[in-house]
Length: 287
Image (cartoon, rainbow, N blue to C red; front, side):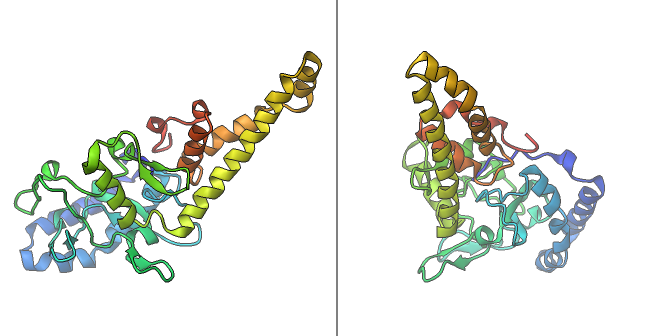
């Protein structure tokens, strides 16, 4: 999962106005007509996809995949029609957020749509899932107390949420040291499962990014060791084995425009080169 700084300046005024008109119409409808109206207007949120993509350099906000050979979905973070809370409980979700771009997240289809990886028994993909932690309220059409909810699913637009999850040494996603006990670790593990963040293809892609970082670091360290042997060797290395190119490439691999930059940053931290990482606070819309 990557932090995405939303930027309304990237969205044309006409696209925002169309969504606002649809919202006004929805507010005036009786409850039994809302779901049908939302379904007929799906083109409205789909029109936001290209502008959401600009905010993340075309990458899925959940998986960080660029998915160049598949379409990206505009996911409703809070489901617009049905919200599945548990295996046996669901409700009508958050229809008043159907046209709210604040509720949109750019998502690879394998994170957004229910799917099964190969012969795996458990499915991945968010679908209509939106469980809530105990102790909070549930917002409804008549009581839109979103700030009082305690979502299980981590939100890529909240820096505090993104700080809870990171790539581990194995290439899988896991909780960071900033998680406060079982409550936040549960949020991380549930998010990984619901969004399919540890599907084999994703893990392999992260591992490739991490191997590239390791190869570059090994080249740098060989040059540093050689340069430290004596003065003559130091001059030779400086002239014929410069490390500037490798250092620049390592930094580029951690920039927000790069696929799986989170994996590259994680590997640099594991190898003791954290100072080459782009800080997470600088990662976001055109950062």
